[in-house]
Length: 445
Image (tube, rainbow, N blue to C red; front, side, top):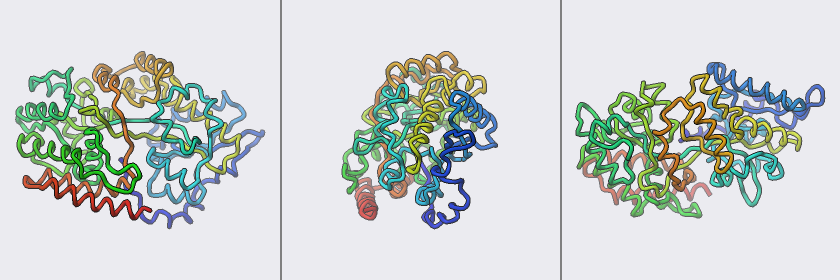
């Protein structure tokens, strides 16, 4: 989930023009007639190991491609929502620039990305990239970018608490009824143990409501993006399940208005049985909150009817020359789309004590997936069996809705009401939220 962009971002465009490096169009060549490209998303100096790996990759790539010169711009995060729109409007994006999946449609709509349709055939393994990912970068038969990572959400759970509660950690909950039953048994352990936790603040409640709607087979807005669809049987099922767990079963604890850091801390302390998230939460819980890879596992989204997916990738400056686009595509292929290379160099990752063997990113199918999975297995340093069911189960995914952050803000109120008020009226909450979301969607046109 992304933070809401600052309303005044466009006003900063003038300042950015002075502060940002020259646009791609000015970097066509360097000494010796090389094709020069600028790329962003270099790790900051504070992340010394990651930065060293990135610079090592640039050096190796330039050695393999002596006619290309890469100028890297460090960034943390890779894309700052507060400045992204201003840089885009000012034409100051790097030759190869980072985007969230949810930004792709807007960049294309504003005609700020180059068409790379003629270059994708040169990317080895491009045909093995999952269509649900490549389709994000396509519009009207043209392709405007390449993926870097992808994720989908599932059910993270604590195997140790499952065992302690008499549950089989190798058979995680498959439905929301199963989640409810397991949460009740885990909460019965006492000593402050919570069976299931959910977010309800800082737009994160609305984010999770969306994931849970998808898990019920529902949607957030109509296909044409003009009307809310939250006031539906699926929406009511989401809230009724939460209300039952919170007030009937007492399996969600008394502390509410939780955010992601609260829940990660509970999981790391061994006081939480389950919550929804993507696999990348697992190393966060271990690194920041002293969780155990042995105890942490992830299962498919309950019900397997749908899940929230996301990720990121790279697009190419519309001012880029054909040579720059070709060079940029080669770089993204090397750095992000080749098993054993760049960000997928699992041997180096294991040497650097980064987790190897997590089920995502999971970009490929076919022969490329087999090659990547074989390398991951060779250098795995986490318990891959804990993620097998998640990885082996295909769950259809959907992206965040349009006006996502504004919609999430509306639904925070719905989630917090259900989790803090025993007498919350589900029908009334969803009806009111639907009206507000309809207004937001009308104002975007």
